[in-house]
Length: 327
View 1 (tube, rainbow, N blue to C red):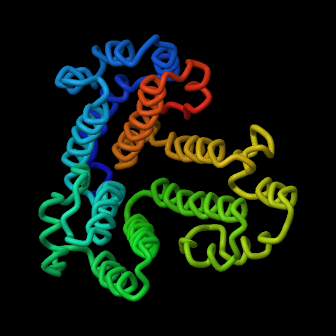
View 2: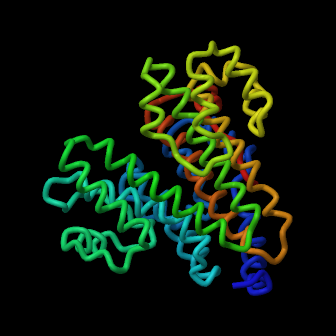
View 3: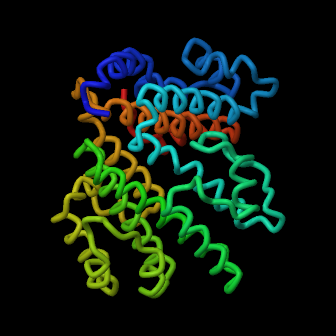
């Protein structure tokens, strides 16, 4: 598809963007007195129909998944099944593949229905080793993950191999695609994934070999950059980060690098800002992916609020966990 083919789709997306929950609405929900009050406050939103089907308020995850599934289906259809969109949606397929490979009988429960592939179909394909309909990158990774897990018994190897395959697949698809914005977003996604791994492993005292093991290729920041920083104090890491494209992560001070929770939140905010220019594009595929990422972010924010209320956290405690909203 060329950019002109998305004119109708972008028109639909512009109308849907007006229904996204803004920061003020999310903060009001975080101040609600109970879980039921939050769900009631969502009754007039796009989540209303799914919430209305809940028999138990504590099963709110089903409503969040139902709304996200609706949006994924819509965006996929509006894009005509564009590979750029599928690259993002495949994250749910990769979660399923990892679960299937880790389960002794190859028939796990709790698989996601948000991916491109039906989970029952995926179970059958993997158990019968009939992978012809999967992209080559995934086929190779599945074969490697099976062999490595058989040799080591280490489930982390399944995660490592499949995650690397998805990141590489998305990189190749977007590199060959029609959007520089989406490609640059993906490169930043890789870099921030590696940065989080770098910070986490340093915190727990792991050796550099662990970073080599989990490092994702094709980012702008290379493994050698992290190697040179590995034994350096946090002040040196902060000074280095301040001179990269990711200096905005330090807007709240160097404390970002001392808290995995804060780093995770700031990385999410950075990526949301990175895709925000999609709101100014009138004909390309970018607004479709931007809306999909916005909805995923919105669901994450609502999950933080709902889980917080279910665990009787206060409004301020919930607010400090919230990310930025796309709306």
